[in-house]
Image (tube, rainbow, N blue to C red; front, side, top):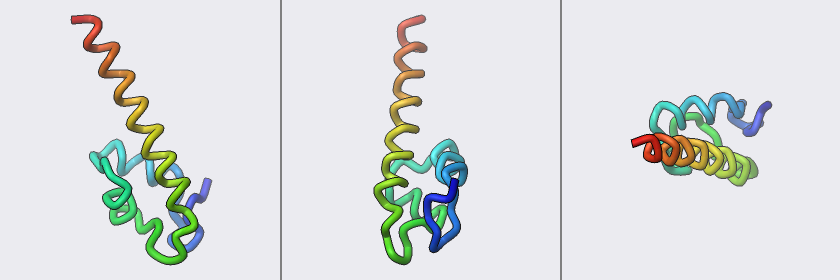
Length: 67
């Protein structure tokens, strides 16, 4: 799904840069080109970033519990 029509950035693009280490909204936007023009996509990009953080945090909890 396209989340930034101005930069033609998809949700997969956002997830990829998050998996590659982007941890802030600014890092994601710089890496993908999202949010550089009209900015209407910023809330969606932030939601995807938060979802990524939640999934990483939940994996950490499971790994920590196994120790």
